[in-house]
Image 1: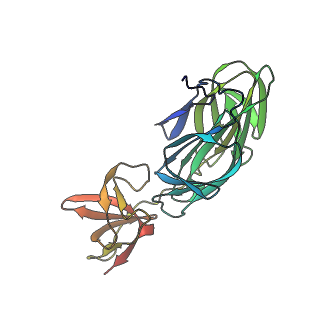
Image 2: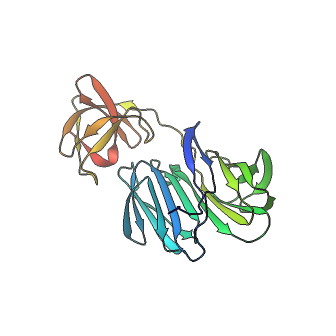
Image 3: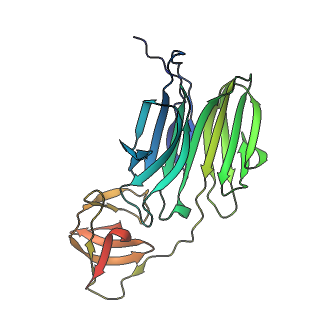
Length: 272
């Protein structure tokens, strides 16, 4: 049987610290069908809870969820300072809601988008942008549109680039597709620009770190002291390693012979 489903299909790629999106309207469910869709992407991988029901890990895509308002909670497998993020989302019949969240060292350092498509019945497409922090500048196709929250209308079917910026925060840019008769709700969270504290050498020679319990039973070792850095390996709770350097919320360890990497200080302790 031919699969019929109306949803906003969004992919993303990282470029210059921003997330870029593309959209495509696929098909339509039969009118009697009232399921909604949800797609969630995170970095790092996270557990997904919808009204406390565990849906599994990211990336996630479900097409048979009852429409309505839900509390979405994301629990990352590793963070530097905070452990979860949650927001209310709306799932509309025969449409997809898309959530992307990039966990930073703290919530202030994190960023993401929630894109919700709603059917309006009007002839032209609409875009409504809200931001965190409030009052961020909104640009569409390179033209400044004012400060968020901002409602815009009169869009034909097609792609448009949205850029959001605010002093003291990292700007975000992404591409969306508008559809006649639909409103695209864009909720954007910007990450604050944090002044980097250069790593310092351990003050005492011979210091070590012990890996603490983690939600996953292991802890990633990364090339740099940021969650987006490449993974070099994994260490396990109870293991001990030489401490080489300390950064903000990170420890640099020698995890293998002649191999060094960074781990989250939230899941490790210094020992003599």
